[in-house]
Amino acid sequence: MQLALTQAQHAWALGEVPVGAVVVKDGVVIATGFNRPIGSHDPTAHAEIMALRAAAHTLGNYRLPGCELYVTLEPCAMCAGAMMHARLARVVYGATDPKTGACGSVVNLFEQEKLNHHTGISGGVMAEQCAALLKRFFAERRARRRAEAESDADTDVTSRAANAAETGQAAE
Image 1 (cartoon, one colour):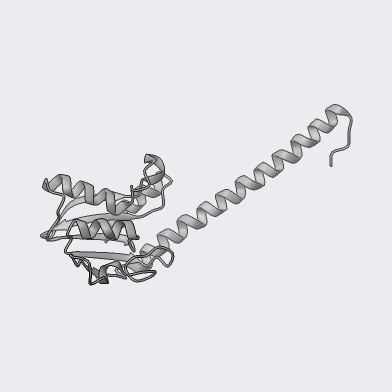
Image 2 (cartoon, helix red, strand yellow):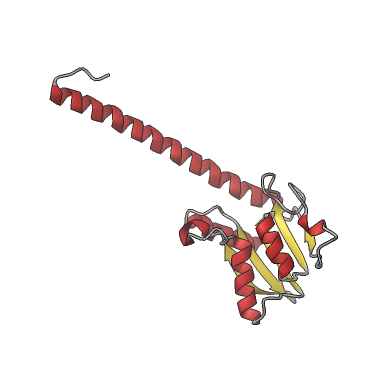
């Protein structure tokens, strides 16, 4: 999970939500990935999907039997579906996602008996560190947006005052 957190930092550095993923087979890391949907203009470019694509390329097969995926945030429905199609043996996640989590927070797709493949799940691994990274990212982003909004408001007032001075009118 520590390597997945490192991958999440790569996403943050690019302005993406910091989620990272790692695929392991027989105790060996075969692929990594981090969130890239904004920069790549691809709504499917979640960390898990990026790692699954890399792992499939490495193994030369879209099926990944015997592989485990470690991810810093509980997977969404899209990623959970891809994991089941890849036939992963197990998914290990850090922080829960109360808005889109598909491993039990909102829905548990892995428990659906009617599906033909059942991937094991383990949650809460390094959950505090994973959640803290996300909280810091969003707090920083909110602070930056507030500062930008205040700067824009200051610019508006200054601009209106300058315009009023030029035209000899009172600024409102």
